[in-house]
Amino acid sequence: MVAFADFHRRSIEDRDAFWSEQAQLIDWQTKPQQICDYSNPPFAKWFVGGTTNLCHNAVDRHLADRADQAALIFVSTETDQEHTYTYRDLHAEVQRMAAILKAQGVTKGDRVLIYMPMIAEAAFAMLACVRIGAIHSVVFGGFASHSLATRIEDATPKVIISADAGSRGGKVIPYKHLLDEAIRLSSHKPGKVLMVDRKLAPFTPVADRDLDYATERAQHMDTVVPCEWVESTHPSYTLYTSGTTGKPKGVQRDTAGYTVALASSIPHIYQGKPGGTFFCTSDIGWVVGHSYIIYGPLIGGMATIMYEGLPIRPDGGIWWSLVEKYKVNVMFSAPTAIRVLKKQDPALLSKYDLSSLQALFLAGEPLDEPTAKWISEGLNGKPIIDNYWQTETGWPILTICNGVEKAESKFGSPGKAVYGYNVKLVDDQTGEELTGANQKGVLTIEGPLPPGNLQTIWGDDKRFVSTYWSTVPNKLVYNTFDWAVRDEDGYFFILGRTDDVINVAGHRLGTREIEESISSHPNIAEVAVVGVADQLKGQVAMAFAIAKDTSGLTDDAARSKLEAEIMKVVDTQLGALARPARVMFVTALPKTRSGKLLRRAIQAVCEKRDPGDLTTIDDPTALTQIQDQIA
Ligand code: ATP
Ligand code: MG
Image (cartoon, rainbow, N blue to C red; front, side, top):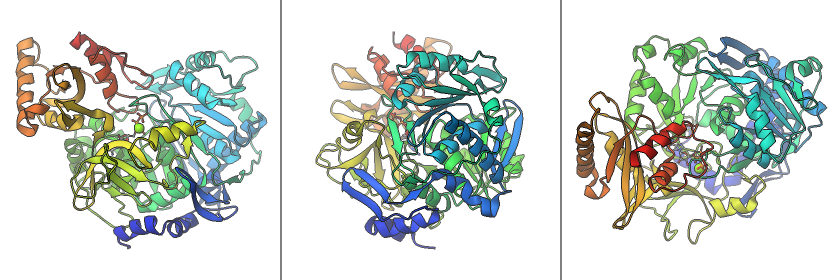
């Protein structure tokens, strides 16, 4: 094993040699002539002059050695379906889907929007697009017409692939009327809509526009569709960020850089091996789903589980039963899902044989210590590995790379900077680099961003530069908009988003620090803290908390008592300055569909402003509760 520090150093100091070695993990039609062209910063071009294909690397390449091995394991506890597609089956299905698209005139560079539930056809659709060089744009199936319309407008797809319905908790959620309405709202109209009819929700096809997938597929059972070799920099897909802090940004990804980055991450970060099984519980509508339900595991020659359903239905043991049944080696989920499981009977964890599992990876939001400890104990001390990354980066920025060198995790830290990432903490006011231990700064990445990261914002190079590269004074660096500190061992701790800082009487406080302090009260399950404008102090902290046990909170006196207790906790832990002006109790907090707290919306409501873009909110009544409380 190589020492990780050397591995990382080489990836920065001897960048081209390093990535040229990683590039050997994939198949090329033409080898690249130049590893990285950074002559026009901040725009990086990786593997210039090379040609390759993402679908070839995810599917066709494995036919020689593992055609009869499981590739895609589709499990739906919503429709009680379970089906394993081998690499041979997957290859056939992807070609059929690709043939349908080609028959509709879709060619290299055309966009195809995918608005689908978590079904195997969605995977076929993604792979079929990249097979023929079309650019997919997957929109999370939980979004309604308005969100969908803005994405149709931005991506201008030639074809949309959709389905009659999704299903959640046994309840059918029809898609078709939402799609029709979105197309009506959008000024761009797709040429065709390909409908996968699951026979869950009857619908009327639109004449001359809607095509039936089963009918079309039947025409192309044996059509051969070769992979279209595309330049390394050819866009593979666009995907919108979660919209936690504002209007979602259309992240554009290349082909070769992404393929190499994922191919390299499977052994080095996830310790996945060809023939193993990867189970990522995310959704294909998110970046984690793109990279680790679909592309990463398949590029790595693994079987991947695609799961439609809740983590607690039929019971909270369902995911663990799949780990046992399919001998899952690598599991990837989100803290929010683990918090859901935490409310279930812990015996459900010990009921199954989890010996195949090597590690559980978690990403998307801060991993709080109680959740990390609970799952770590439940999994008998198997490594719980936090991943810090963004839609923009496509793969982890910070984590523990156990496949390079084994290292211990530290609670509360996602780990060290991943190879390829030249991470710098900087002072947000001066842009000065902070090199000392435990200094708080903005987490930035020095260009060029490593392979796999966004090339630009779709159709908007200007916004790419102004959003990410122009916000740190005196420096051209990529801004993650997250605060962090690095300890003496090089482990980073994420302290929250840069717009989640409040300024009380000239003192800058991270809302997350206050939230952690409040959460340490034994009766607090979850809390959101925001800064609210105050005439006297500039800003004050406001807290909205969910109590674990609400039975005693029936009157104002009881609520005031708990509020006072919480304020005392904050006083002792952080000082009176950080004490929230009010702690109010709610039963739900407004979150994005991907489980992230929408602090900006809470703040706006508290300041009686328009909460702005709420297209990605999960439960609007959570915001109404807050509105009512402060009214
Ligand atoms: P938008 O950029 O549209 O406001 P978003 O930032 O929530 O939305 P994503 O790309 O899905 O969209 O999320 C990335 C962000 O999630 C990171 O910048 C960070 O704030 C947070 N995050 C992700 N993983 C972790 C983690 N392991 N620990 C702490 N925070 C994390
Ligand atoms: Mg973001």
